[in-house]
Amino acid sequence: MNLSLRRVLLASALAVAPFGCTNNKDSAAKPAAVAAGGDKVTLVSADNPAQVLAKLNGKDITIKDVDELVGAQLKELEKKKFEARKQALEQIIVQTLVREAATKEGKSEEEFLRANIDGKLPPPAEAEIQKTFDENKAQMPPGSTVESMRPQIVSFLQQDQKRQVAMKLFGDLRSKAQVEVLLTEPPAPRVTVEAKGPSKGNATAKITIVEFSDFQCPFCSRAEPSVDEVMKTYGDKVRVVFRHFPLDFHDKAFKAAEASACAEEQGKFWEFHKTLFANQGALDVSDLKTHAKTLGLDAAKFDACLDGNKMKAKVDEDMAAGRKAGVNGTPAFFINGVLLSGAMPFDEFKKVIDAELAR
Image (cartoon, rainbow, N blue to C red):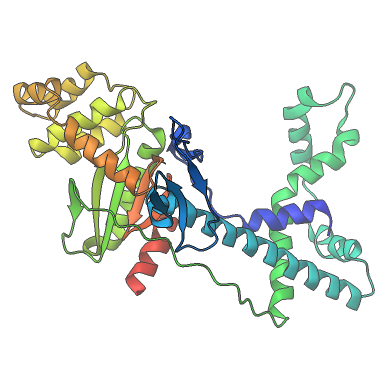
């Protein structure tokens, strides 16, 4: 199979990539520290999950100790391994089906693909070719003409069409063959996260979503429409609980988190939450106090709460809970304990929620 078709196949199989604000220093694996002062550290194999991983000054360090720190990341790696195998398996199946179909017609694979993909593509209109040439002429080699660049322009304009035709071809070949996929997806990692904090939705809902978020993170604000759609679609079946996870490289995020907790004290958390995400460029302390006044909060009480760091311990507690759950970036959503990381579209929430409702 030629390179372009392999790219088409691979692109169609790729999972949705998560997008979010990440603490790079936390996401990288950290080497084990060696104790100072001549202490002896003995390392052993980690092949058996039940065995001791290291002995330090006579004390055992077990796999359980390690997994409390990196268990969520290890489970995420298992998921990525499954996705890689799934993509490779799909590629092998398609390549085999193409080879068999080409042999049946007495053609090479390249001839078969050209006839059934390139041959099914209508040529772009001349006006579209000319327009593309005019818009990109500055980036073309000196002396280029429409005719000299026609093959590249046509290929560019037909990229999406080619992908759609290729997917239809592969689907047709697959439907006519006996394909039984035995590869099974590992169970979704499930983490115990306390649903503690401001919430909205039915308190006895079957689905609890614990969100760890940062008011200065642009991806967190982008995730809000998906959360709103979840609430609208599932109604009383879902409850959303907000917990703070201000990242250290967002210099205004921690104080914004404290301010929202001060607003919660006056019963206006969600109104303040909405205001902060709508005004991420206005998170200085003076801005936070202005937002509070605009929302009708008791200004004196709010200012005393914010200036006195009254809610610092609350934010610290949320951050500790997030780190224990394996959070190293925002937004992070735990749907009945199943992690969904990043500013994901509604459909990704729907997949997890529907699976949980079906359990």
